[in-house]
Amino acid sequence: MVAELVDGFGRVHRDLRISVTDRCNFRCQYCMPEEGMQWRDRADLLTFEEITRVARIMVERYGVSSIRLTGGEPLVRARLPLLVEQLASLGVDLAMTTNGVSLPLLAEELRAAGLQRVNISLDSLRADRFTELTRRDDLPRVLDGVESALAAGFDPVKVNVVVMKGINDDEVLDFAEWGRRMGVVVRFIEFMPLDADERWDRSLVLSQQEIVATLEEAYDLEPIERSSAPATRWRYRDGGGEVGVVATVSESFCESCDRVRITADGQFRSCLFATEETDVRALLRDGSSDDVVAEALERTVAAKWAGHQIDQVHFIRPRRSMSEIGG
Ligand code: SAM
Ligand code: SF4
Image (cartoon, rainbow, N blue to C red):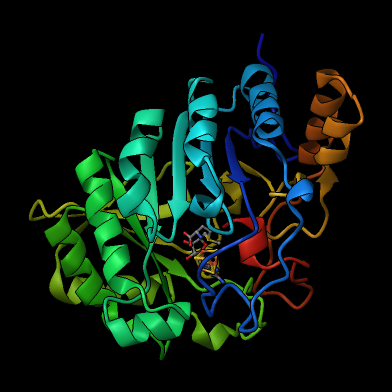
């Protein structure tokens, strides 16, 4: 019988996010420090075999059914399609979050290897603003990446837009219109206090309520019933597809969270905002059995807190920024 990765609040965890590298070819303002990061040594990163071993333990013992590859930028890890192939053989729903810039080269190969869905991060449709936000002049390549993902047959293709007040909040309707035209699902994400430069402030967060109010100025929306996924979703009543908001800050969804994470250097985290990690890499490398690794996973999840408390005085920022944890 399959056991469960369950915490003290009865939440069962079936969604695993794996960061495959801390490296990235962008330095987005809301994520990485302006001066860039000190990359970890290659030897510190889990190998594909180590990643697949932890994933297999979670799938076979605890019924984990969904895996998402993230980073840093997952597509800067060499031979990623090989890892995709290994994970796809576990029979899970396999997805990836990427900045999209390498998709024109890799979309077909990833699809053939068994990747099912992609989320592409894109925060501005204006070239100058895109360059300012990502510190890289690559809007055309990311737009090509979206087209390549659609052409390769990924379904759905989702586009993640981090919205920040006074920075790109004037593009909410542009993104909605573009998403409808392209046939992609746009998901607006509230800015979270996980930026390396620690510029986050509540006043920069465009809330779900504000995003939806803007969308409703132009479109007739119908709510879609919520699942354990973090996005609140709406359908355009005219048949134009759907749109979503990830409201981590204004309307936390911690009570229905079913996610766990493993960082590129093999640290197991029970929450995006966790301040403690379990060193699974050490166990994978010291000859520990699957039983021992599994016990460590169970213990970490059992100790998971109720929620992140971003808006409260005792909120503590995690030591790592989003690019290291993986979003
Ligand atoms: N490099 C890939 C990418 O950009 O899609 C994967 C890693 S990135 C850390 C994962 C997601 O986190 C992206 O959608 C990104 O926009 C989002 N993200 C990064 N920093 C964030 C922040 N401070 N608040 C909200 N979302 C953030
Ligand atoms: Fe890189 Fe993604 Fe962070 Fe941007 S959001 S710096 S693309 S890891």
